[in-house]
Image (cartoon, rainbow, N blue to C red; front, top):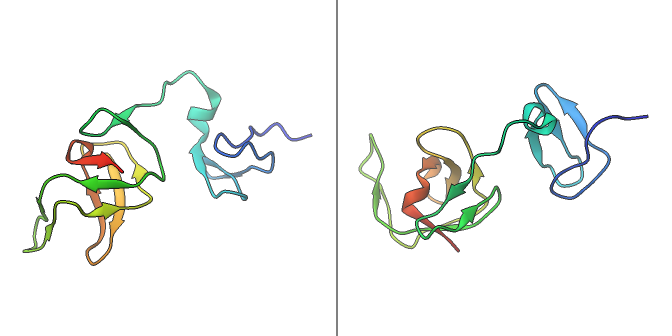
Length: 112
């Protein structure tokens, strides 16, 4: 009998271990074993309007953002789909069309 936890996103019982994470093969959600064991509260990330952000959300940039080491700029109103929340100063990991992979601060986006 499997003692692995169910997927917190889709409640699938077919989760499996991959290194330090659990993975759901049905919805592709990954979460760390440490958080699944309990004890630690998950960090809450909020956008500029105070809305709680989650992995997979779509956000809109609210300010022109210069890209370090480049002359490019992420313009106001740019939609960023399927964000991923990470630890650190820049708490959003994402891909922006025409620019590529970047990290953003949650204070410069709003939930779409």
